[in-house]
Structures are given as C-alpha cells and as structure tokens.
Image 1 (cartoon, rainbow, N blue to C red):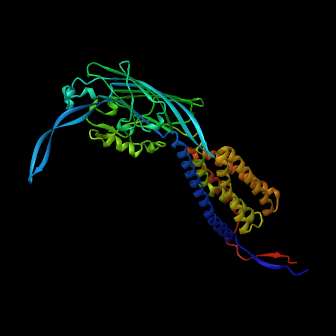
Image 2 (image 1 turned 180 degrees about the horizontal axis):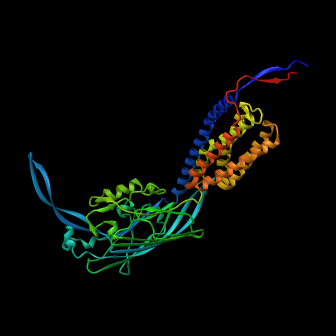
Image 3 (image 1 turned 30 degrees about the horizontal axis):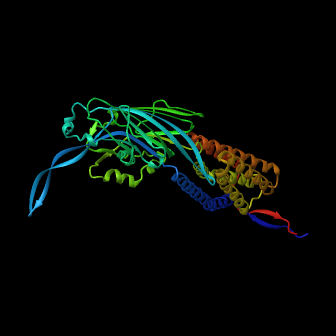
Amino acid sequence: MTEPTARRERSPGMKLLFVGLVSLVLIAPLMLVYALVYDRQEQSATAQAAINAGWGGPQVISGPVLVVPFRTTQTQDETVDGKQVSRVVEVEKNLYISPVSNRATTRIDPQERRKSIYRSVLFVAQTKGKARFALPGDLARFGVTRERLLWDRAELRMGASDARGLTTGGRLLANGRPLEVQPGKGPASSGGQGFFAFLAWDGLGALDVDYGFELRGSRTISLVPRGGSTVWDVRSAWPSPSFDGSFLPEKPQVSDKGFTAHYEVDKLALGQPPVATQDFGLPQPPGNSYGMAEAIAPSAVDMAAGGANEVVGGPSHSLNISLIEPVNLYSKVDRSVKYGFLFIGFTFLAFFLFDVVGGARVAAVEYLLTGAGLVLFFVLLLAFAEVIGFTPAYVVAGGAMIGLLTCYSAAVLRTWKRARFIGALLVGLYALLFVLLNLEAWSLMIGAVLLFVALAGVMYATRGVDWGTVGKQVALQSE
C-alpha cells in the first residue's frame, strides 16, 4: 500500500471559469444548428414554390373597370431648324371609370399539396359579384366630354394577378346580356393580367355588370377596392387566416371549422376619383403580408404599363387574406434554438452546484458531452418536426434527451438521486420552453422571472462557499 499523494483541487472560482469556457465552446454547434434551421426553411420555401408553380401564386383580384378611349388635343413642343415650335395635336387616351358600387362574394376552398416532406397551402376561390357603373353628371370637370368618348371601343376589364389560375374561364354580363370574354388586359392593379370584353354601351343611364370566375392560387388572396362602395364577403373552411392590407374586416368570425369575413370600403376612405385618365397601380404589400410580394409577375407589370394608351398612376389599396399554417414549425424551432443557452446554463449550473456544494467531481469533458446532448435536442426536434409535426417531435426529442442525460448524470454525479434531480430539472426546462413557444407575448416576463428565481437559488446554495479557496489538499489513494 503506497502512501496517499496530495493533489491540488481547483478553487470554486476556477471551476466556474472552466464551466464558462465550456459554455462558450458550445456556441459554435448552437450557431450551426441555427444555420441548419435557416437552410431547411429555404429548402421548404423552394419546394413550396415548385408546388405553386403548377397551380398558381398569390392572387390579387381587381375590377371590374370600364375603360373607354377618347380623343383630345394637347400641345407639343418641337425643335425645327434650331427653333422651338409649339403645335397642337390630337391624341388618344383612355378614361378609366370605376364602379359606383361593387359587391363581391368569395368562397375559398383550401387544400394542401405535398412534395416529399414539404407541403404548401393551395386554394380554389369561387368569386362572383355585381357592380354598377354610371358616368358622373359633372364629367366635363374631369377634363373629358361625352362627345369625345369612343363608345364603340369600350372595354370591361377584370383582373387576376396570376392568370394561370383562371383554368375554368370567367363570365361577364352587361345588363343581363353575356359578353364574349377575351384574355389579358386586366387592370394595372393586378399587373395587367385577367380578362376583358368589348362592351356596347353609350354611357346613358346605369350599367349593371354581373361577373364570376373560379381562381386557383396559393397562400394569399387579395381584393382591390375601387369606386364608390366596395363590399366583400369571404368564407372558407381554413381555420387559421391572417387579415391585413389597407383595411381590416368588420368582426371576422374564426373557428376550427373555418372563417367568415365581411369588408365594407367607402369612396371617401379610398380617396380616388370616380373617373380618371390613368389607372391605379399595384397595391403596396404590407410588412406582414404572406407572399404578397410575389403576387405580381414583372412581365405582367410591363404589360399593364407598356401600352401606348395605358397610363398607370399611384398604388392601389388592397384587402388581404392569407391562409397561414396553424403551426409554423420552422419559426418555432428557430425560437427554441434561441433558448438553447437557457438549457445549457441551467443544466451546467446544477452540475456545478453538485460539484462545489455536494462534492461530486465533474470533469470538463463531462460538461462538454452533456452540452453536446443538449444541442443535439434541437437537431432531433427539427428532423422529426418536418415529418410528424412540431408537438409530437418535441415530445420524442425531449423524451429521448431527458432519458439519455439522466442516465449519464447517474454516472457523472455518482448517485441516482442526483440523476433524478437532473432529470426533473430537464423535464421542467422542456415544459417551460414549450409554454414559452406557445405564449409568445408572455415569454419575456416568464423568462425574466425564471432567471431571477435561478439567481436567487444559486445565491442561497452557494452562500457558504469560499470562492477564493486555493490549494485545498485532497488525499488520493494510488494503487
């Protein structure tokens, strides 16, 4: 039997420093997991775009709008033999007449399509409506007289921003008489896409227009209000809509069985004249409009604004309804990764207290392996969530990691009693994180209170620790 040898044990302060260094090392794998979430989200967006490409993108419905060419004169300045010469020429322009009233109803039938493990929300929207047109009595005040209007070339235009969705065509009726529908020439607010019909009307009295069409699209459907009064009623079986745009619906009804929404927009809120010599342009997407930026193809915009007689003015208003996923798994996984240091910090804190106060010696490698397991939880969560959904994946990944780290803690901390404490701590942390992910508005307050309680617990547990102790002799038996 050899004499026991003495070895210096690190002071509690040095142990705390080593724990901090190991925690900093774990920043790298945690950032890699964060990058992995972003990469998988990009792959999901690419797969959704591939699904939508064969169906239809976000849709913007506009119209009906009555377009009547007219002749007028204007002065042009020219340079002839080095001299500036002005002459009066006759030009042709378009008069855009907005409806006095427009009432539309839309039924959105949602469906999901998959590509591998990814899915996209698609819809078929059945839209029908009635609009009434009438020339204002003071038309001359808008710079146009009835005599100059070319009624034999009048057009009635209806817009859908992605014309690929018009697979079953559309119908237009003027005073009860069906019109022959032609493709293209939609209003500028839908990028020039849609359909139109030539119209036989002399501008006298009122013009009643009935319209209807079936439109395929994805994610977002919008309506551009225009004219005197716009009423839009929408219903769908999709349980999680998002409403945004220039105006919100009046008391929408949302339940697990779907939603209904009712919009009413008056001309005073729009701030648009009843007739104009320029069309209204594309609606400006709000900051949280899902997919609105892709609703208009650049080529469609060029088509709307590129004609010789087409003049596009300021942006239009829009009413937007998005069919969002009930659970955005990438958003939740991304937020959970941001709480990664909460898991690492509290678990390391428990190990540290068992080391300093309880006498269980925990090596730096054991801290590192435990931290690696905590980081792996987020990878498991992401991998399973893409296949079975977020909540089941959370249960599977959390259960697997709690079992693994509890068993490992029994070996590191030397007793199952301490290991059960670590297991209970992890159960509490995972349960707390799930609550934080579902109560986003309260997450800051809950997190702040939790940190306060943890700090108070550490202060109480280490109130008798001499942090400056150095050179403590520990007797070790050597074989």
